[in-house]
View: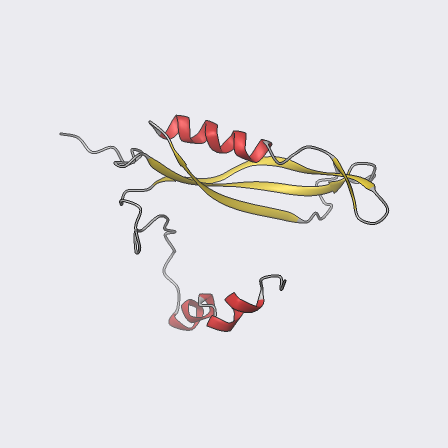
Length: 130
């Protein structure tokens, strides 16, 4: 029996997509050097195969792109779907401790590896307070 690295044994896939925020009437919306607020969102979907998972995640991302009036001034704004950034099958059954994503890293010095680790307090302080 052959093993397919792109197949999820339990039918779940995890994928990320990128959105950028823009004011619709801004002059620089098509300037490749302009800076934009962006969000990379990660979702899981249940699908028969990786192609179906891809299509589902694209549809989810595009679903957040309706223009609306933002801020106190009611400025016309929109999140623009830029595309997928990652798509992986989830090989484990979903439960506590199931591995759902991974990222291979190139060899680095120990001091640089330690810089990748985030202190516990950062996770609690970066979320908006209610």
